[in-house]
Image 1 (cartoon, chains in turn yellow, purple):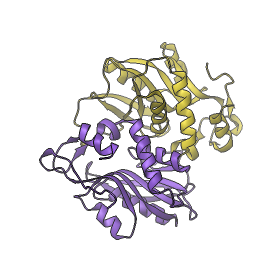
Image 2: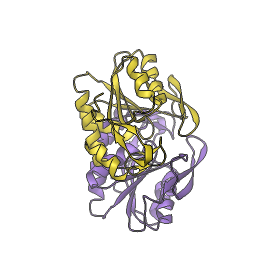
Image 3: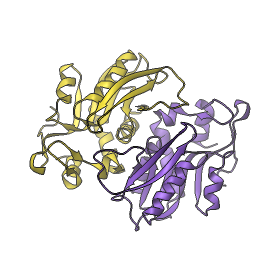
Image 4: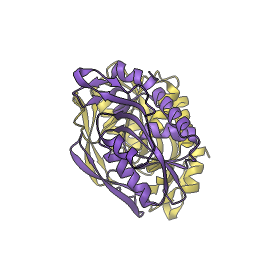
Length: 194
Length: 194
């Protein structure tokens, strides 16, 4: 098991057969040392992909993305879920439904920070139904940029998002893939490169 | 001028006598190298304060906080502006009015991640009217923790928040204090330790 998987086993809480709570190190409290490790892993996986920019979504995608950006030497852009009054630029936007929160957000990115010359690594904390990642990939497409792949901290392998994105021919790298949460037990897919 | 001040001069946009837009490196696009510098500065300023936890607020406070947390060797907790369905704990909460967005948010922090044994450094991206920082300080007080101070990336010295917090006897360290944005020109307070 890698450091992330060890942390999930040690302090993650299985709330149901489909919900894993990692508020103690990723979604509410953040472990900076673990984020550093995650950033290094993403940077190593995509070292040869010619990445020029990381695209993520507020809020839990920001910490792993900034650490990856530091290692790859590229800026991070985070999509906003709500428009700010000082965000006066032209926007790329996409609709994203969150099943966890049972709401649909319009996410948006200023066109100042993504262009057709960019090679983009999309990063997010969780991949379940793939709604957020697909919204981000759609924004990359609107910018006519190249999507080099998707980096995910925790993929729920028993939900469909990973398959949907991989079937589009997009590279997905998840640092932990969970195959099951049944009976309160976290079961990882052994080779997380698949 | 420090690196942050140089960046503000180089790419910050003065939208009015009171609004500085730094979406290109802090609030929408993030410069990870600059965040690393900011984190190191906060860590140096509060190195002897016995900090056990950093408290910030989503979303723009997260990147500088994680870098500070990495340098201080402590976890970061970010207050949420909306409640998540998987956040089932008892919450500390406070109301925060944003003049920029013209809305009031209830911010909340799980009581699992702040306790009376904590010595807390509050970090935020901007200090203007002080509403967000005061909300975070209120949450520290609810947890009966000790607030060692407030670290701010950019303080608008011509607005009242900094005075209000300092007059309470709370240490405020702002890496850039802006005294004026009049005529589209950024004027820094010379000694930002005051």
